[in-house]
Length: 296
Image 1 (cartoon, helix red, strand yellow):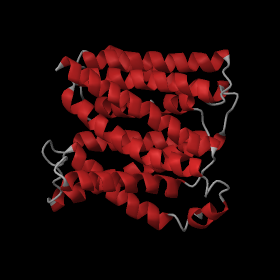
Image 2 (tube, one colour):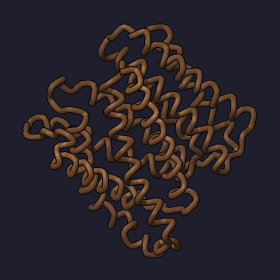
Image 3 (cartoon, rainbow, N blue to C red):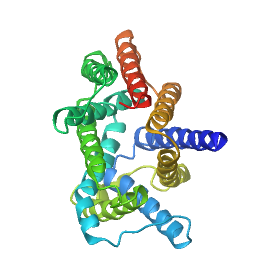
Image 4 (cartoon, rainbow, N blue to C red):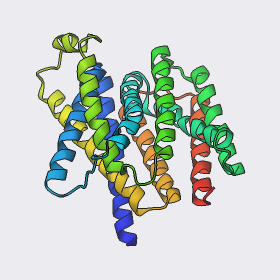
């Protein structure tokens, strides 16, 4: 059992690193900045692979309850906001900066639990939220590559992530499984992003993309679609096999390694103030892992 958990954790980490780095390459190096098409492609591939897995008996999907499906639709709308805004932000921001801002979603969740659900919150979790918020708040003033549009979309992204996780936790235990939820997210995203591709100008603008007929672009897009699907599967498996504290530890480890690899592979100007913000965010997430392992 221990070896199985380690294997699942390592698989998750590899998918996490590969997915983020591939997406960053497509968005920032190749500059494929057509999010409705890029995210629409990824969700289409994910939906098709999940549907095939269901038909082959490799995954169990049960979306027959209309009330459960209709209740989940607001979360699917937020999921579209998560991936669309995340794509816009990641195309303009370095991965460590993006992850630092992404972590603030935990502050929203913590605030909701404390203020609205009146749940008991440990001092470690409160300190974690304060460190994450302080790191993200100071980062724009120390980032020598500051991009207002990138930060704007990162804020939209973290708000959607926070609201999505709150809705996800408020679902009835036996309403929809994680796989059911993701299947509905894929279906809704494909339809909504396809409809939005023309009004946003992406559908016609992509014809001017200089690498449209290059194999490295095709290969990177295919890789991003498959990696996104395997990341989703490994995340679901991770959550089903491990306690919340163990899951948080693996996610933290994956983020640290991804941020480190991105600094080596992509251009990023590091100042002492920027490094301080990143370390403060890392400390905040480490405290979050500690509080999860303590079960508070």
